[in-house]
Image 1: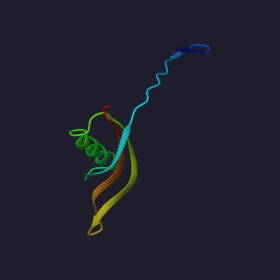
Image 2: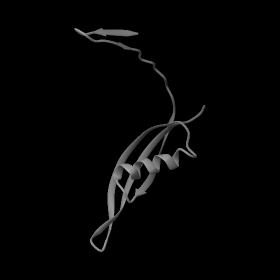
Image 3: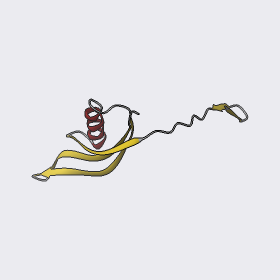
Image 4: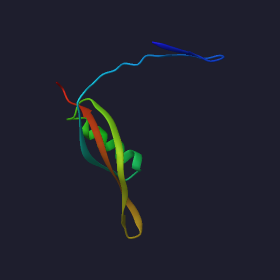
Length: 85
């Protein structure tokens, strides 16, 4: 445990080293509301079958336009999750 003291603030940091094996997969989420909602939908759906998701990185964002109107937000993500040993 490492303690850092500032004038009015004391932070205690505990660093835990853990070695694991992670798998990365690409997923796509969509929404008619926002990019954030599209990303949430993708992670929510993936979490139904993938356990221990640790990180999601947005790799691409685009929108679908029909008749000059934005109709769909689309987000591509890479999610990483720990593999059980």
